[in-house]
Length: 399
Ligand SMILES: Cc1cc2nc3c(=O)[nH]c(=O)nc-3n(C[C@H](O)[C@H](O)[C@H](O)COP(=O)(O)OP(=O)(O)OC[C@H]3O[C@@H](n4cnc5c(N)ncnc54)[C@H](O)[C@@H]3O)c2cc1C
Image 1 (cartoon, helix red, strand yellow):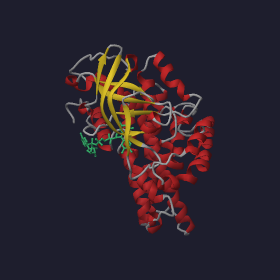
Image 2 (cartoon, rainbow, N blue to C red; image 1 turned 120 degrees about the horizontal axis):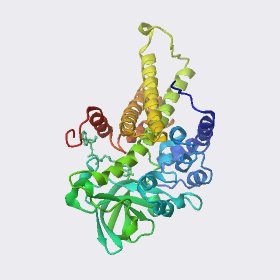
Image 3 (tube, rainbow, N blue to C red; image 1 turned 180 degrees about the vertical axis):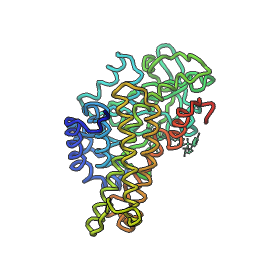
Image 4 (cartoon, helix red, strand yellow; image 1 turned 90 degrees about the vertical axis):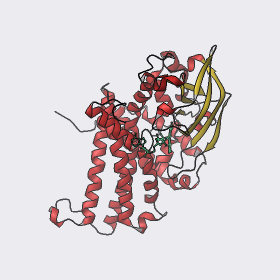
């Protein structure tokens, strides 16, 4: 029998996360939205010291289901602050997926104890986003070192990882440009390494509390054993190198989907509370032909959020079962990104000026929602992955 109930211990973790989001994140959400690039020191320290929530809290959530529920609670509090909370992040996840036991120990121990640290991941370049075969950053072997050259943009927590902590960035660079994706490998560049610098911080539409950095690598030398996985370009006709990045995304996409869920729930709750305060009831049992347009809109928003949540929990559950979840992770990511973009826009529409005013957080949630349809594979790219998997097409056959 399929059991959709959340185990009591996971529910307790979620509830603690919710309380932390309510106390720590919500009260300062507007402040950091209006003070972009100001470091939310007090939030970072609180989340690091008491990991009930935040990226470091996910590791203590008792598994992937608990972690996605906690993520959604965090972004219900504030998506930008959640994104800039310290912890393994995308970079640390790439390490977990590809590293040797020695590298795991060397790179990940900084996330347990000591001062807050961040693990970022840099794939995107000025000339390359969805099409990763266009990566131009290079890694050339020189004795017992790699020399990195190139530019990465839109690196979440890039500054936190390299300048504000003893963190690292996992940089995707080509060891053989003629090999296409097969030549692309991940390299760990640690804070304090000469030859890497933060060029600028992006000014953004939403998630403004999160730093999004452009990084320049100029003859950046790192130890030879900072490459994750094999340096060998196995088969130039295949995409072996890049499969590691994809494996990272299979793991992280359900979490990005969960980020969207928290924002969508915040917006939906606000709409319902506002309607309730105005004495407007949503009649769930009324016959369909009697429903008002508003009732249908609210029910549609709720149904979409629930469907997105179910897909996300399924993709996370598959991680716990050690099942391949590429299809389900992309389904969850594509559905939640789109659903939450529409839910928050509809919420602003339904409440009119109340939704648009900066007096409330709803207009911010509409801005914060959109990123979920862009990073970790845009909505279109995730739908492409879903189509390929369902139809049995290769990347070359369906692009
Ligand atoms: C706030 C923020 C944080 C980010 N954090 C990170 C990070 O930490 N690390 C990192 O490496 N990157 C990060 N990114 C970059 C993000 O992952 C890319 O922006 C994203 O992958 C899209 O790439 P692109 O910007 O080059 O757009 P493009 O790939 O040029 O896409 C532009 C449009 O074309 C569509 N499109 C592209 N190809 C196809 C296709 N084959 N079929 C149909 N439609 C297509 C896309 O869906 C999109 O709508 C971040 C971006 C933002 C805004």
